[in-house]
Image (cartoon, rainbow, N blue to C red):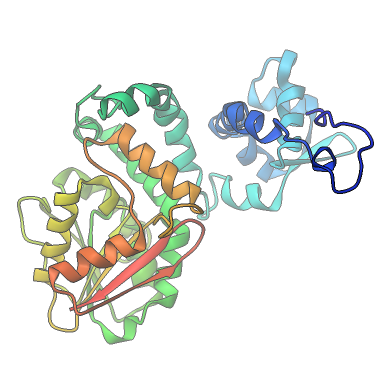
Length: 352
């Protein structure tokens, strides 16, 4: 982008000598969908998975990915300029980050959430203006519909969705497994576990724990497949139920990861109250989301995620750590605190 036009020599200290406003940030964000869709398409076409095998030149990479030669070079060089690829002497390779996180064959792959963004969210966000004016979701079920109902009704779409949740949650799950004082507890329930990665990370690192994933029956096969793949089926089980109509299973710790933001205020309070009832004295409720900072000026990801909840759900919204602590204390928890995990995610922990 060209540099902003500035006035020439002015007297020091004069208003004219101050830096002129620049449109650069406005244009960068306003046209940000160019860069976003370039990355999403590259993930869809498995550019990074291909280059994880070995670096390749333009012709080889173009051929192996089945691209038309007209714009293949522009695509790869755009990915270089955006910081997702490296190019040396005409040979393209992944950066350390894309090699670790965007190679489908690595357990550290987080591209599932990007695949979902490409298939679903990119299109739905085109209706953000309508959502802002009506307050209605804009997902598969249409305005006013239930996106989760539509996703859960299609086994393949559900599996992809649950895998995407693993991708966006993996870093936070690993942090929780390492930093929470698990030695104080024996049993743990994850309410809304997706594939079960939070329980897998926690129970892999803490061999004494027994875990339950609690969700609708449709999730069971995906959850059990994932847990079995990590050889934890003897200690981590699935229990079918709805946290709207059924009590949560009893346990020393109840976890809700990227769950609470899906629901309206009344439902949030109800879920926290159910967790309180499931816990013994001294038990812990652990909630994590992309919590918005208390003055609502810094965690842009959390604020944008709240807009995504507008797009996706009838009443969901993201919230601050102070909000969450307030709801926990309303439910009867005697102490609660918030700590940062990784990236935009923070965790609120309350003790009964």
